[in-house]
Length: 102
Image (cartoon, rainbow, N blue to C red; front, side):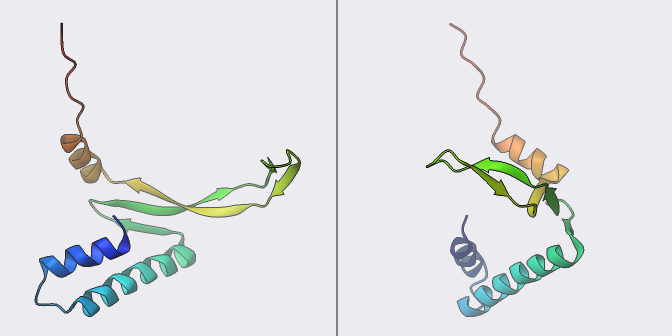
């Protein structure tokens, strides 16, 4: 789901809200989440999951075009871990089909 699809779904679910207000609300929520991750390094939404920052140490990479080694600097990357309720809900709806016995 993209940001615009989220806005469309919310606007359809809450027709009393102007779509510009829904768009602004989504923008503000995502902005607040980004700022909180930068400041605190962790966001937890009960029943959904948590966002944390994971440190990636510097390493030597390789330029795919030339094959020459390239230093890759250290960085922090966002990481999402699904909560128990979300994992169970996804598992119920995406359970694999039982194998057919011939």
